[in-house]
Image (cartoon, rainbow, N blue to C red):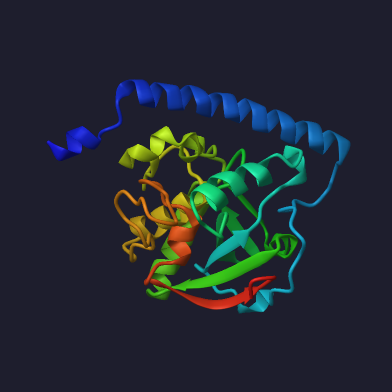
Length: 233
């Protein structure tokens, strides 16, 4: 009975789906327009830069990032994230990625899950490297899970606020992923620990509802901070 009460109503699911499709077209359009004007430009988080020692990264590490304001989105993402995650949610971290090895990270990104060079980490302002307390085998499985989702569209559902009232805002197996959802799902699917520090409906800072926010991952007991760089180091 309790599960039925928490189940996302059909109308909510429908509205969320429509909004996701609209965001897909909007973000893809902005990205393509930027790429035409700036061909070959390396991806950037749009921060002030940092001096993180990338050699500390190990396969399966979860990386927390602040801020993200990529130029291809015309500087619009940063203020929105500051409002939603910073002011309303009370979070410092805005984004999460997973180190896949060989100088690559996998991340739930707009408009699609992608794999990029880890040098992009130097384009944000603050970065924290968190090591998951589990075996190397599970870490490798988690990375493979992330890699299997490359190309899937971004899950914008967490940004609509009303969807945060339902557990369906986060999936282990889904057809869309937002950044911290992907990292959390990867370890859940691989038999690893739950890296969501605030499971269930969270209404205290960092406020996240049923979503797995980036701050949720960084605050967990099942991860350990092994390196950081930036203004809040």
